[in-house]
Image (cartoon, rainbow, N blue to C red; front, top):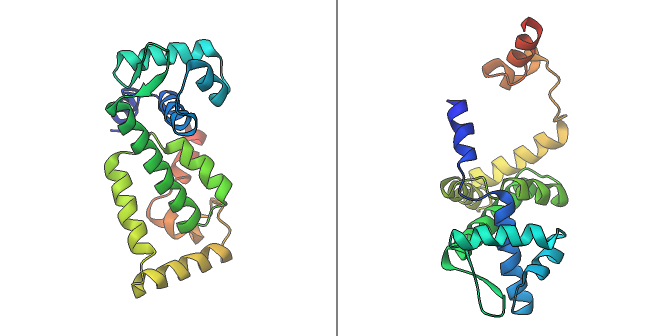
Length: 184
């Protein structure tokens, strides 16, 4: 099963890099009213050649179009990718920082890493979870308070101490791998 998922990841229509190129076009057009290859290169801190190559592929796939002045703009398809990517990043960042209590900068970095990888369904379920978690419902506020207290009291690093770990009693992420390494 895992191998099939891994292989499917390679079949994503757009790479993380391509999504960032589209987001750069969008940001530049909002800030300046236009986006050219040179502007995108400067914005992303990469070479114009890299941007030209990426834009060629994005134009061929219908995400970007170029006018007679060489100004780039997103098609409806490109805008959809930008919207989904940005939405997922915001949801993940909120989950990591406000629900799990991560540092805002670290949450932003991790959210960027996964923003293009989560499905629309996963994002939608996270939104539902966050709406409930931050609601005024007593069970949600009690859970959030208890969770934050537990985080403050516990060392979050796995100590590979199966006897004292409730998670390890059910499903251990560490012990089978260590056993396989020893036996391998």
